[in-house]
Image (cartoon, one colour):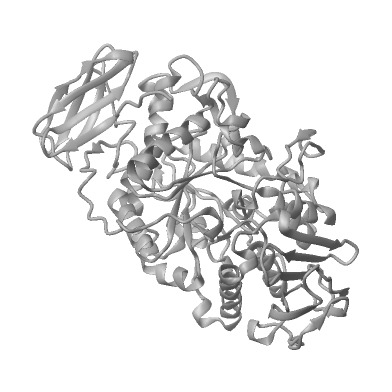
Length: 614
């Protein structure tokens, strides 16, 4: 594990501000202070092309640019704050001046996470970190134990999903900047909610991306959808790796973030002896030893590759968890009938059972969509290392019209799907508004200032949907209306049906937290049977008594089925039924204990939850 080099502008009251930047090809580097006074500071070259210098009179709030070879002026690549956007001077911050009150906070283990993914700009009407703080009591009431923020690294303009960030160290100015993010994390911890931050280490956004002016941050060795790949294994890559390691550690150390969700790690190209992800985990473990806090690294990957999670002794990268798309795809295709694009590999009932028992559906199988063999075997990998969802920003936002499941399936099916996620052995994740059936879409939006770039985004967006037969016009990503249409309405307090759905989610979450059999769900202590012709799924958690029996009918017609028996029970007591009138269902509730082997009728699109007796 390499020794890390501090970068950026670091202020301390004792010394002032130390500026450090990596610019190996420059012959001269100076800092030009633009405020409060216009002056320059000459930096000294050190080993490997680092430049550093001290401004004893430096103070928080100072604005500055780096001047390369007396001509080119650029903001700091490791800027902690861009108060006026991506093209303007960087601002010096005092890293240690925030009054944290979370000294007794303990991070949650994976199996206790119930994650709520949200986009800062559209979650609240304010579109800020403060707007989220105002809504935290509602999330706490729902039972959420962690929020996952879509990327907040500084991007161009005020509207973006966040994956076009160009200053990885700077929290978005229009969201409330670094101070606002710290207040949010502090408030979350005060209410028992962990914070997961989505970070992007596989590419940089197009506007305001000045890294090439400083050094070889990119390499032409690999071709990516965004152009040249970030340089994690070519000449001078040690210093690019340092840049991103320092970034990850900053979020954990200075912002008290509990977990990082690593975007699209399959696009982090590194053929070196120690993969970037493995070394990132090693640095994170070192930080844990320093701080006494636990941190999680959660990968997003579409490769179904258990190597991400395997211990380094087994040739893996040792990450804590990963997103698991197969479960989503298996559910989505069965309930919607959609089989276009990447959904063409799914739609078979047996895949749902396999996703529960073995995790990866494509575990060394040929994929028709990719036209190659995909995946490895994750059967023995613990369930809590996989995050599952029925909706997320990609699966909604990458639809042409951004429709949520609310627009695609019935109200009763929404409740059945909630059960499939919250009662699975995996870590459940909800997407903002899902819990009450939000009607607003979640569309793709940007706010670039370069017209050519805007046109390229519009064209690229249309190209994405060629594999689908969706009708209608692609909403303009640049339009402010597209962004505003994506804001949550939070309408459930005034909508009986939405409130019933939210209350059902609350009941499922409470059950997940309280049921002994779900205390630490285990694929090896779980019975799964699927009646493929009826699309009736029997899921029995047997790790602890009482056993928990979850019965799903994922068709739109009633189905007759026979209750299972286990070694330790011959009768079942009804706990929760999505068809109950209290949840807006049609009624016909089961109230008496039921003997095993008894035939029952499951209402259309429903989940019935029972527990063993005796």
